[in-house]
Length: 135
Image (cartoon, helix red, strand yellow):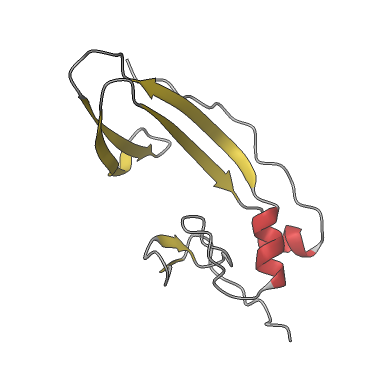
């Protein structure tokens, strides 16, 4: 049995019924909890064709014999004019002596639906990627 893929407006969102995250309506697998949301071969092909436009990973190690450190993880997204579109606290916690945490951030971009149907997904557009702070 095949479920036909219907066109979805780019950027349209819905809520994952499993983890309640806001996700793209075009996805057939939730990127947060990795649950399958529907059987849709075209959407699955498109999601597999996703390109990682940005990936940053880092480790924080707490030195031994020091008081606990608190941490908070914030993600901010800015548009091309430098205006903050969204800002969200993702997680908070504490590191005890000798503990470590690994943090990873990735941004995946999906090819347009027409490109996947033709079987020729294109790579993500090359552009400046900055993982540093603003001065």
